[in-house]
Length: 92
Image (cartoon, rainbow, N blue to C red; front, side, top):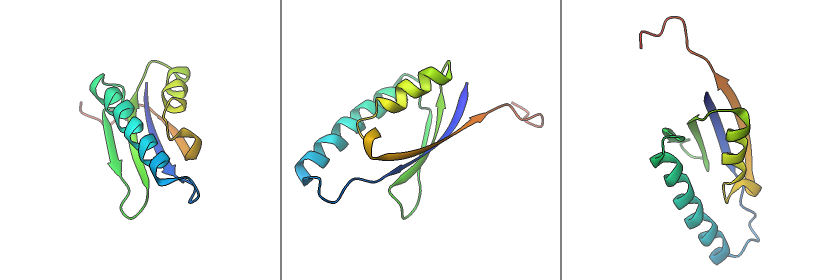
């Protein structure tokens, strides 16, 4: 199953810088693992925002929920999920 996911990150300004840096480092490692195993095949930054659009390829809604809720930055995110289906004009 394919999903388009928008993630907007809102780290509180009162979170200590060292703690925020540690969360971001763990987030990077976690997200790159998902990219390597194929569940997170695409990620694009939204210019001028602490946001991204990503494509996830997972077996189920539940797996996507588990993947997203496992993100270390999850508590600081607003997430929008759009399920995707093959377009009838797609030649691939």
